[in-house]
Length: 253
Ligand code: NDP
Image (cartoon, rainbow, N blue to C red; front, side, top):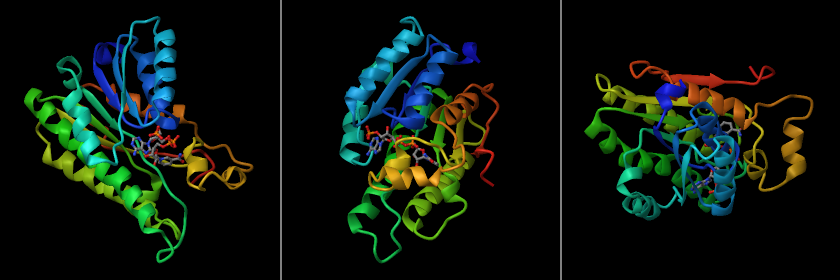
């Protein structure tokens, strides 16, 4: 796997915390000479990640820190337009950035919360993918890994917006994978169950007590658990597409 990922350029969205951060680190642990573009809105966190990756790889990995708000189509355009040629030709795109804002029932959800979830989880992921596909087509190789959620498969009351964004991720991934059959462009979805990250608190609008209560007495996954799966998917032989993966902690069924 180290050899397959050697010198590959991997772009991770939402790399400032949780699954995205762990994914960037896991790529570096697996192939020390990997090239990583780490993106998110919080640049200081990305700079800290870069330092950690450089330490883990003894300076072998090249890391490019880029501020990127995927929910803003103009920012996505600016980001791709500003990438130097030696970084633009990416091999792997990990569309991980995503969020949930509250669990109100339909009719009570603020319009701005609906918009931000769709702009980030769906439109952001689509815009990033649309920029990557022509790069991959020109080379006839490339890997797209979209982070969905069990929420996209098993929607629950109070989750109509978040769950439907993740169902959209799933349908988008599958359509694109089918569009690209007979090419060397792979498209995969990794759907996590419960993972303890900043997401756990963000979803309750910063209420830590509520977030902790969800995991009382159970052991959720960590970002690293999902990161290992993402790197596994990316690290298969080019002809192998791990199309769809559902990852649960053992208490979740
Ligand atoms: P975190 O909150 O820890 O991380 C979310 C990441 O997304 C952060 O790096 C954040 O960076 C980034 N992000 C949010 N909005 C934007 C934006 N507009 N533009 C760019 N980056 C953005 O949560 P997780 O690591 O848990 O979440 C990662 C993915 O996993 C999400 O898609 C989530 O839906 C999914 N998931 C999580 C589960 C869980 O239980 N934790 C379960 C199933 C799926 P910044 O704020 O710096 O921009």
